Length: 366
Ligand SMILES: Cc1ncc(C[n+]2csc(CCOP(=O)(O)OP(=O)(O)O)c2C)c(N)n1
Ligand SMILES: [Mg+2]
Image (cartoon, rainbow, N blue to C red):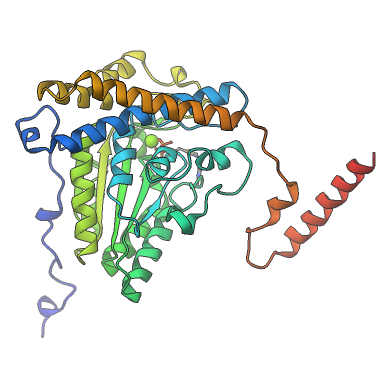
């Protein structure tokens, strides 16, 4: 035997089929869109309009002092909606802090989805009941969790797959590397959706990575990378659905890079005019996910008054309900802060709990 005969010498897989398309994959406005089902396009349109309204309403709530912080996904609605629609009831979603909309599109109560961002409670919704992990503020930590859950499900023979969302900035985290490496080695039923919105707060993509695209990173782990127009809801829906089907059938993980743009500032606490040009924002406004869908529907003669008004009315009703319920002052017990942090509270937590209890009692007496 020579080294040439040992497993380490030769490439283990052919890299070519793993490589992403040279340009982001698009469907809307292309001849391929003709094969898209009219009912799917109408339904995506309704969801996009609702999603846009949700972002506007949540942002307004920050200005009214009803929400501490809101990382808006305005401009990224196509990815948010497509992620939720790619899941079956038994699958799991692992969102980042920007993905409240995906959580709502998955079926979580819009008020419960904002509980964390209001600073009321750890998560707000019951992750097990809706199969949505808590919105993750620490970058990329949700990714190894998604891989662990997907791998465990496979070992147990459960027909469950996971979809994990992360931003372009999150791809520089060690957790991103560890998650993708384990996922590929174990062939775990998980899909990674990177929403490349151009920025990590004020850091542009060019300072984040020297990779040709973020989708190329997949190849180094041995999984396919897909580069998609993240504002094209139909393309996102098709690619994510196919990637999830592949994961479920034992084909292993996929990394999907959605090329999109963060139209609003990082959060309501950020001033984006300090680090980016208005004409870049204006350019992306001409490639808006809602408008792209409207153009396709119009071209196919599908955008009638009933669809337009129905979508707008539904979005308005959701926003009105959100406004009303978010304006009710929540009844909170500060002691709840210590529940569900660890199964067994640490000595430090016990000490802090006792301290807060004493302070609350002193306040009550005075
Ligand atoms: C581990 C960790 N490091 C740093 C931060 C601070 N931080 C919060 S958001 C953010 C930028 C993330 O950008 P990106 O991943 O592109 O997501 P986006 O906000 O664009 O959706 C940073 C650095 C954090 N939350 N967690
Ligand atoms: Mg980003």
